[in-house]
Image (tube, rainbow, N blue to C red; front, side, top):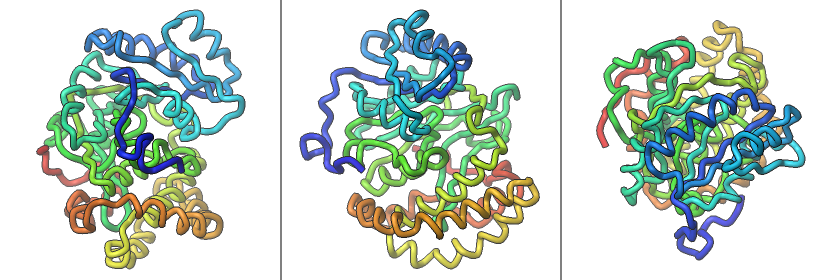
Length: 358
């Protein structure tokens, strides 16, 4: 992890631009052909084209991504990784080069609504806000939501509110405070990122790296707000596959890394029995959906290969904490038992309503 106190010791930002948009991409030229034009429109709509930069981090692609961008999008800067570093590593390359006071992180497989930046921008003025989660719609399924703000439970299960719901479902179109924003389309305040390390935790590679960053920001006392009017359409899991072994493995392993490194001691001790007990219904749900093997292998990999490093990292992460365990718990999901059982057996499509207020 990089320094935890900011470049000047206070967490303040010397960044010269208003916004840097970072897009990691691996062999994603065809996706960028769709993504970049919609991004240009959104920036122009917000009248921020002169105050922004777009960084595409080409993660050692072999499809001519870099040459194509230079030819057809000359205002977009390309950073080429000499070796593939995975999603988190590619994002970190972009973060280190960013000059914006705010960071817009996008997947290459999203189509950006023209109101995306314009709707999120008012939240940038709130000094308590470190991140703005945006609404994600399912590509190819009209009116179906993929993500409407990320929540977290005290037993260590992240929740994606709105997944599989219709856009007219209660709470979907109302701003609210949440726990984390999905890394496929989210804004981060640079000064807040610097305060908690300045980058994603690269060993997570992909999946729940955004949850882990959201947790660090919450520990440091920052807030995340969900803004439904800032929207994208997401094709989803194009690189790894929507039901791939890699996705299930990483998700299961990374959930344990996040929980055991980020959860404060008093909450960890209180809820650890429930965290262990929920393994069985979660496993049953994955078996029903045909992903049980990836889930089991991911959990086993954590305990066999990652537990010592996670425990060492825990000391660093807990040093970031500026809020009480009670305050942090208050930011987590109420009625978590029904929510967790919902994710176990219905892939998160029947979560109870949330308080839609900020």
